[in-house]
Image (spheres, rainbow, N blue to C red):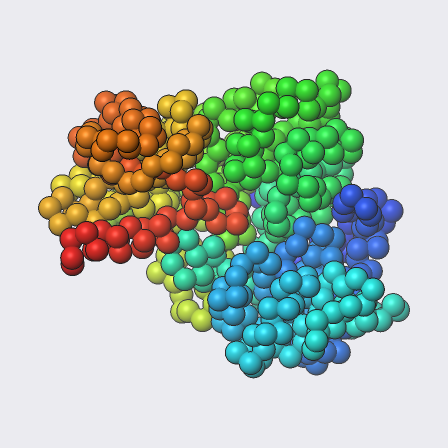
Length: 537
């Protein structure tokens, strides 16, 4: 671990270095425009100069919406260059979530697209620290009332005063998804982000010759920082159609294709996939992260695209990457070995004793990318004095050091004191070709503690409601009940008695966060309310 090194730079120094090294090289490209490294660096300078004037000090909190657009890169690096802290704003979140992020972080200036600006103008009474809303996509200067267009606040010739930035100061606050609780602000330092930029570039084998295609709903820090560190060209695909993204990958000569599992699952199931990518493709890797990619989808994409499909693992608290598969040692179901400079161990959740290879435990990681802490909290319990961060994920290590994840610690539950792994049950259900997607959570039960409840998305949807497997269907009942009963019966044959599905329901879709993760928390709350109604408790 001691041999790993990374640049002694502030975060925005990654962009400055790339601009000096290759000023005319394309940094970011989208359908209608491209931005070179020097041009992007100049725009970050102008943003920084504006923020110095607007805030009049260092350490202010600057909201930056991570839209899939070059403007995000300029405002994100510009916030740090001005001596202030960037607070990531997800433009897809709703009003309540938006209020929570800006109020908790005390955001003073926000760079956001028009729909988010309209919400913020409405929320200004509840956000007394927010004094300026800057619209990043204003067309012809038209902006909501009490907001400003980006081009109107940037001086075309201004340069920031700058100064030496402490690498251990907070560069960015990124809020967790809130899938297991109220979103928390993660404090990421310049050192965290610069280290992870190099770690990711090494793990993904990025270079100045690389062309990365981001088929994502939002810009992600990992993709931006690692590509800028390597001097790679980033191509932003804003078309949600997965086949259109492959056509763009072929057009630009993409070497790396980044996608979320939900989109990659759709791509793997698309009948047009076989002819979507020409034989002369430069694609060297399809990279997935954020949640688990099904093995069958990974296999299909690998066979059809002629490139390895690589799974990674990380979280906001780790800037985010900690593990990544390598093409030459691909193991289905694993998320890879640690990225350079990172350690990983597994501990028994109750005793906190380290467990052996192949033994299940909670994943802990340590490295220069691990956060400084949470906003507004003292040293978090999940980060110990030795720097080990407890991820809350359950898994095991194999003899090659590959990490295999099974569940979130908060998602496992007990039936008659036996631990049920929702992911294990889901893997069995999804093996049925009639199932397009599924989710498993606990249904409260006074006798057993909890029952296994499964929500199933059928490939051939048939309307039906919740019911207990094996219950006789009423006359004229929808045919979907028979399908669910059959799916459940086959799954239960492969499951231990405590894992067996006791309640099942057909769903139109699985509730997911904007990044594609299953949203169990809200679903669990709904089921708890329904269970209480049934029992009268």
